[in-house]
Length: 113
Image (cartoon, rainbow, N blue to C red; front, side):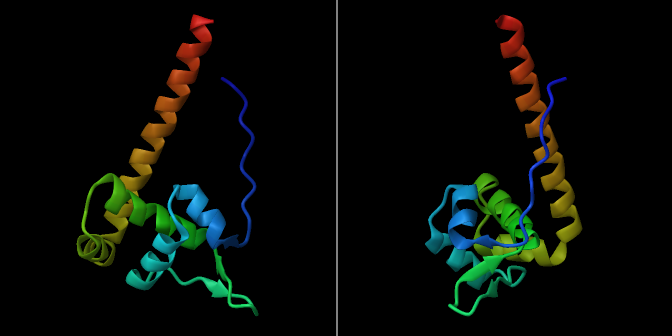
């Protein structure tokens, strides 16, 4: 099995870094921050938003519900409030399946070579 280094997690991410992670505009990050109360970035003295790894995880959930599953913002808000644990579990299952798929593709490509 190929060796993969663990990612180094930062304590805070800038809004630009978060937007880059999801390949979206910073305006969408600001909009979701206002729409979803689970995202509470810290602000430095300049007023720049600094997102914690927990905020990034919440963005992953929101992105999964809105962009990947096609839910409305109201539907995503309701799902996060009422079934947060189920939503997290579903997201984790989908994430693991994607990782397995990527690994299998990598193995297949290495076999062909």
